[in-house]
Image 1 (cartoon, helix red, strand yellow):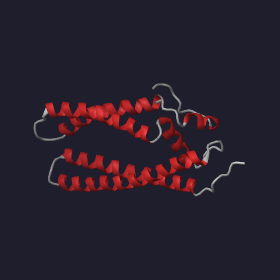
Image 2 (spheres, helix red, strand yellow):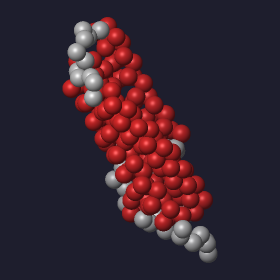
Image 3 (cartoon, helix red, strand yellow):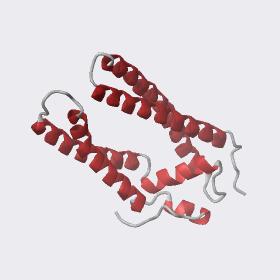
Image 4 (spheres, helix red, strand yellow):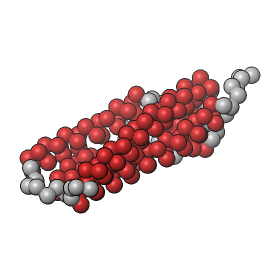
Length: 182
């Protein structure tokens, strides 16, 4: 699963959208998830005023370092592979699909993209709610609690903003008339 198949031209779009290889940026994303999962528990517990349970930090860090990248790979696989996800994102961002990609291929992918964008709206609202709850708790807590509230708020706002852009782009693509093959 190596190779960078994410820099394709429009003429290569249909050839690589079903490719299951993970390109360089995909590997870097997996590395970032691994490092982030390993470090997040240490940062969280270090912000707490009480003694740090280092065994719990290590176990939770190792678990997250394995689970987060595994969930990402599973997510790519269930959506047709990393290259299909990259191609779909490009279509939604550009607002157009290359002419050689048949409707039977791109419409279901963009419909799935739209459904996932709508689900992310719910997730974003939950994150903002958690930020508000954590801010209420932080009012009587420590500075570390404010840090956690800010992290939840950033995740919530980022998820809502990205989800809105994805929804708008996908809806515009799906509003296009069905192409007929001659």
